[in-house]
Image 1 (cartoon, helix red, strand yellow):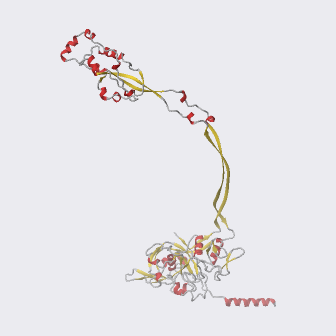
Image 2 (cartoon, one colour):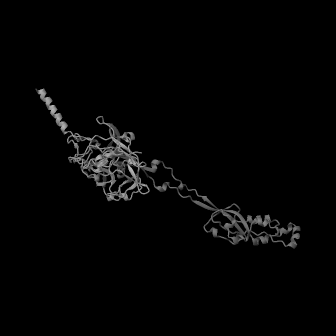
Image 3 (spheres, helix red, strand yellow):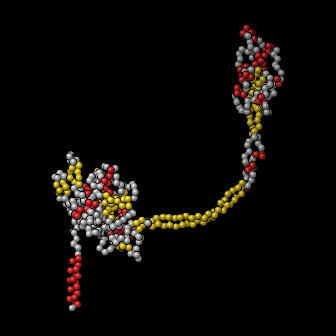
Length: 546
């Protein structure tokens, strides 16, 4: 009987579960047709796996680098003994004295006055030249040699140096005297026995050639009226004085040793960062599905809707990767655990996520501090996350939030976007789809008409031409740019534009589950303070691809 009741209970339970189960839309995995401009019609294309746009990126490994900081304070206490020497004897005793010199005058030669030369050796007239040559020595015996007389001498000093004759003697004085060699070489004079006569005169002079003559002050200014002029050199002789000898004293006599004591107490603050690679065995490698977006030129904005979307203009973008889905609760909870976010959803005073809102499906265990996702909501996009928190997630995972231009380019479908030619010269084009991959919002996203007032799990609608899901609807998506309503007017033809100036108000794109379809269009722009959050906003992960 009990077995029958148990079977009946299982049947009833199964019926209830079947009745309550929501019919889910199958996950789409194909591209919409591409518009062929040459044939002016839509053409089918292969599936995303054939286009080979999908890729998988490791955003967290279970082997991670961890920086450990070491701080320490080293106290230094040391006594230093410094030896110095002081002079122990008067400085005058060991200083070298300036040298002392004695001055002497050394007789160099005599000059003969012109008057005496004319008397002793008269000039021979031309008519007597032959007669004098025939005279004998008796003629010379009649010549009287002048006697020694102090009037024959004159003194001239030469300013204490071995200067030349012309520098020593006044020019007009020297001109009145003859050199001996000049007298003996004068053939117009009677030079009979001139050598003997001159030798006799010089031998009676008070000083002979080479004699030392004591010097007295004022001697250089003395000049006596004389028939002879004495030329001399000035010589300095160093005077030896035993008192000037420097005593050779030993070092221990010359100096006294003085010892100074210095006590030094100081501290050194030691700080070093060491990087460890730590293996976390209880964690798995974390991957995220990405789509490769080939860069190119496209038209951002439009000319028909809000003013901040106008004008539509062409810009160029580089290659990049963008996540196939909006970041989910599962991924964000792991990030919060790594970040060690507090119970208020803050990290270092920055609001990351609002944990108190009922639509935030991430909970924090008050005992362990670990974050987890409510059952059944792992694959739902995270909401109530601030721009700052979203950017923290992207940066920690090696990427960033997409720029506003990157987001719109990816939502359009990149190089696979469907376009039609317009203009009189067929030189312009317009995009076929108002939404990301379809004419109708209901095909590609959750909005007010089909969301039943709640956010939905990612990937339930069809993707756009790049294979990206939920680019329109479900939740608004943070972009990296600051909001500037004139940004489209100043960046025509630019490469990878990004607005980084202005107030801390950030752009968000794509619309949400609570918006009308028109607000979920690809070109619609919205904004919110970077530290604000609400249940309508999440984000998508982007990283560079070179």
